[in-house]
Image (tube, rainbow over all chains, first blue to last red; front, side, top):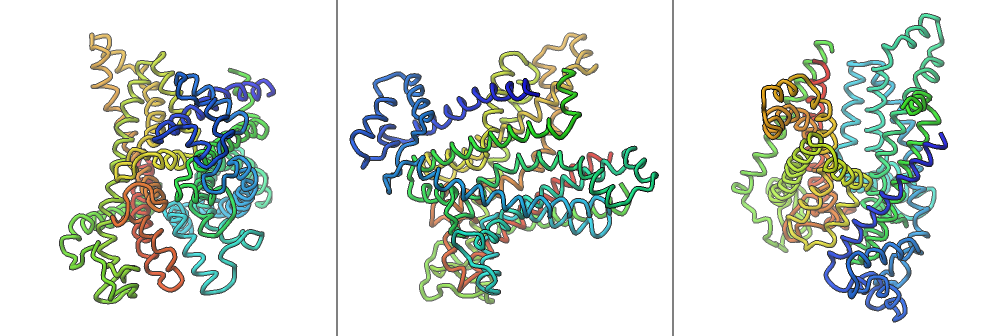
Length: 309
Length: 272
């Protein structure tokens, strides 16, 4: 177990090197002096000098990448062109908000997705199944920025139930609901498939023939096996929560990293865009690592498989 | 699978296919029939609600929204489908070669695939398209750059299984060259799987394209794109919701139909 975690942590190093290599390449694609691009033309002389020392165009590309890597490791993503604040400070300030949004999205999506998937899977091919399958496919087919706008129109402007934008718990409902729709779609689909798959397994038949109560059958025996694919899907979908945040946070005026990235894109504030995307990717990588480790904790079969290998 | 659900799947597939044919025909031929120029600003008719004259209403510059959706569809669907096709071709080629040749080449390409898939794909596409000059093809490049990796991984996995099959050994035994085996035996076998996956992925390419154009990346105004139309009329949401409603419906219906088709391909395969 510990060995596995260590191995995974070790594999993280080349991955993080690769991610910074890609972001370095993207930075080099921007026309102009990379040091000025990162620090911003209005930055203080010493800031520019510090970054120029690392990225100096007189050095070889490899040395420049090395310098860039050192900058990233020190948390130096440059300054915003407009506020002249350090990008890393802005991100540190805004990231908790996005994380909060992602968590509340999951709090809606996971139970709703599992319940819908269960209902569809247990009544396979029934009209109910058709409706749920259709709805989950709809969730996966609508652009989040559009559903966000529609929800604001419906709940804030017409029904006047929820505030359209701002930061706070009450303001969290609409954006989480928006991001939850596609997540409910993918979670209910994978739940449905798993329920259908395990319904015919011997252990479920045994449990049934023992006369087990259905709450226990669904809530314990089946749910345990459903959680594993659901966790996988959450790990994969976490990337779309992060990119969904870029599309929806602005609509709801949510002060997170998504809106920060959006504003960076609109103003061509390169350090802001690149910095937020690198940070989001790091978070995504770590979430997926946690998901893999979580597997080992909850599913003994995965552990055995690794030991055998 | 029961007969009833088979019929249902067949019906769904037929409806989705007909919807897509309808959308493609309207997008391709519609602009020849609409009486309005999608670029023509008409300040006498700004923000008109849907009517017989303008079935989808007009936008903040008095342009007919239906005409703009039809023109915009050419661009949005064109970008999304080109990006899908390029991703498919690149992924298929790299996946088959990488899986069949193995060794260092395989390690090299799979490292790149792992790396690309470590990113939240839309964010990487955004980062790439922000730094490139804003043109229609920018969105294609960005989407294809991140899009080929899952294709390559899928196809490569399948090639690894195929590589040891008897018919490959037989081909080798009668003296077929490695290149011929790859081209004539491996690739055709993978084509079905890869196209099935492509069918499943088109919907998400359409959504990604709409996200990029919503962010103002790719084709620039006044050229209409579905995502761009939503983003530019966002401010008028309160008074004139149709300006946001119709372009979004166009995206959603197209993506939904592609997803239904993709789904039915998978169901068909599994129920065999």
